[in-house]
Length: 362
Figure 1 (cartoon, one colour):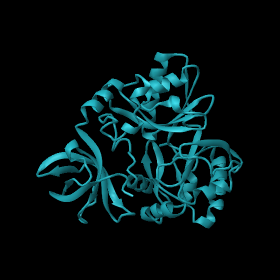
Figure 2: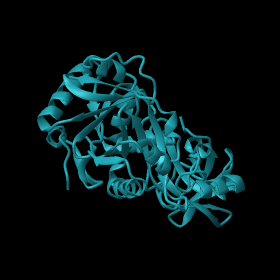
Figure 3: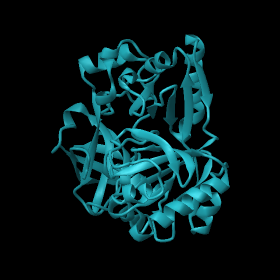
Figure 4: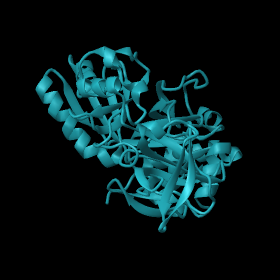
């Protein structure tokens, strides 16, 4: 397994390490997932997400390549702006969801760590077909920390050389953090105020950033946060996780990603198929649901049933620390996707009542 430049710091902090996306990553720290979740909701937490992939796209056809392979309209981006998007296979299944950054002279695609290799092959294939575009995989060069929570702005601002208060959501600036050249991005996967810090360098540089961050956030109770709390935080906000809620068998319309699918921009991979699904209406939809029983925590793969008939399956599920009850996401028949619909989750040879609700959960 690979390790990030923060590996020794995680071990020193008592992290429980697991294999994730080819890396040994911290899933939680000694105080536990619930504690870490609440730290991010009320103060400031730091996630090491250096396993993510970063591809640099440049050349005369850089924008044309991105327009072909992604479903959002990257022509709307201006330097300093980022965009949530996804890539699709010709039949409409999702290759991956990703961020697109317009850096002025080039673009940066930030992809999921678990999908990096297949994403890279996909981007390379289309770049070769198009020509006049250069693609470079800089994933191993970049470190990435997500500083998230209501006190994140005050924390990062103390050690950044750029004013951050006016950096809008899905915007970024390039400057220094603790003297280290850094892309400071107003993005995150928690639903809280937060910044993602992209910077290059070895373990010594990583330690410089980490020490400065924790000194700056000491009065705010800053802590390291693992992948376990990252999952509960994103689930409460209804954010999709690739491999669970979206994958190569799901299309953007049924996954609730119609808002980033810009058919008007012109042809792109699977645009004809997606347009057909939109016109005809998806036969199933990704929904959020809340358990109406305290006896079950929903988990990935549990069948969703109604009157003894399987109508879908749970894609993500857990206990919501904010709501104090079980919540989940899953695909159901389109006629049962409206908030207020009553469904059941099957487990342990019985079923448990649940109700479809509007996302986000809170």
